[in-house]
Amino acid sequence: MSKRENIKKTYKLYIGGKFPRTESGRYVKWIDPKNSTAVNICRGSRKDFRNAVVSARSAFSGWCSKTAYNRSQILYRIGEMLEGRRSQFMDELMLQGESQKAAENEINQSIDRLIYYAGWADKYQQVFSRVNPVALSYFNFSYPEPTGVVSAIAPEETSLIGLVSIVAPIITGGNTVVVLASETKPLCSITFAEVLHTSDVPGGVVNILTGYRSELLEHFSSHMDVNAIVYCGSNKDEIKIVQEKAALNVKRPIVYSDENWLDNKGQDPYRILNTLETKTTWHPVGI
Amino acid sequence: METFLHRIDEVGAQERVARLFSRSIKKESKINALRTILSMIDLTTLEGKDSPGKVKQLCYKAAHLHDQFPHLPTVAAICVYPTMVSAAKTALEGTGIKVASVATAFPSGMTSLEFKLEEVRMVVDAGADEVDMVISRGKFLRGEYQYVSDEIARVKEACGKSHLKVILETGELVTLDNVRFASEIAMEAGADFIKTSTGKVTPAATPPVVLVMLEAIRDYYKQTGKKIGMKPAGGISKAKLAVQYLVMVRETLGQDWLTADLFRFGASSLANDVLMQIVKQSTGVYQSANYFSID
Image (tube, rainbow over all chains, first blue to last red; front, side, top):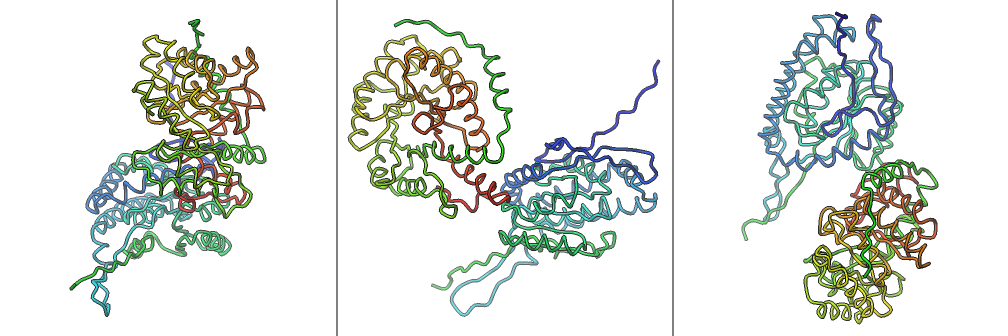
């Protein structure tokens, strides 16, 4: 009998709950640091981004109108599914150059982070809501609402924990997201899409692209149908592009520079608040 | 009446559509196509809850598609229900935009010929430049082709100088053979335009159906020298699809038909998508529906 060939995974994009190849047909050859494995990674184009924003926009109304409790359950479910795929992520993280100990730590942190935000999903509203004192006969209160579609440039240095730390607070707040994965460590990002796909996250709520940051950054920042952009990195020129282009439709730019995502400081409820807008209501009383 | 049926090769029609739809229209040609599409739109509101206020608003939109972007064409016509014709006529005075009204018991057509003719006269008196009638699909499917043909001829008579568009409601005609035959009946009975659908039945305009109707128009032109117009309607909401239809028209009927006098899109939300694409082409930035008027 002939020797059996291992079936290797094709790394594709994740848009609207599906795994399409890039519409451009372009690929980037990715080789691991030890030069043992080569993988073709989709070089996503601006049109892939455009399609992803359309998916994110159409998923938004359904996702933001789910109950906070339901969103919490789904985030918890992502954590459960990630736990179940531990060995697959171990392999990929180590292939991307991490030691076994570091990989294990990164996976643990990623799962814990999802559980952390699952816990916050039905609590941040109370914490960030307030009753405002006014001098008229109104009951005046403010509470947070999701911003809408958020585009995100995930941290370059980490593959899994960076992506999870960015995506989790955005979707916890009821937003939908299009995220560009790490350029140098893209494997875990697409595998994480498979986790999302099996966690009752509706298609389009999280869309994951791979490709060149330099090529896509401008479109992530300028798209008129994106309401906020989260940028991870400390490149001053890139930050300038993000802030200038974001001004086109006054989208909210959020920049995370020099963060240690593996640390517990990489998580807090204010990161949820960053992609929320505050609504204030004047309700007549005492008439 | 001669009941000679053209047999349409359904698989062939689909393959031809697939080939035509694979054309890529870019840059200058794309902008020209998008502007042409705008000028071909019959901006439509056909809802039971329509009010003179809503029609007035839609008429304003028809004449001022996106004022932030200068030198845009206006749409070809507004398409409304009979009771809204006079409101539309008043609102569009001096704009050059035509008023089209559906008539003949739209969308079902299930009433007597007398009532239908009365309705047509009513909308023509109210000032409708174009009348969109529906054929009696039930009669057609029962084989009463003569009745269908006579009905169209009588409605055409009642239209006077107004243009007549004949809606085949292809979603109810079942086969492409029927679509082809109904197109021929309508053209011979005096239609100025043939139109796919009311928009109230799914499927509405599908690419193979439009192709078959365009080919019927082409063959009729070759036989008689008369140019009949075409109006796909229902479900065309994306600029990309509209551009593909233009390619189909160009390749089937030639350049002559690429004008609002002979080709129209019946649509309510297409205009905004086309506008978004035009602005995208000029600014390089993907647009959001939030920055375009709803009606």
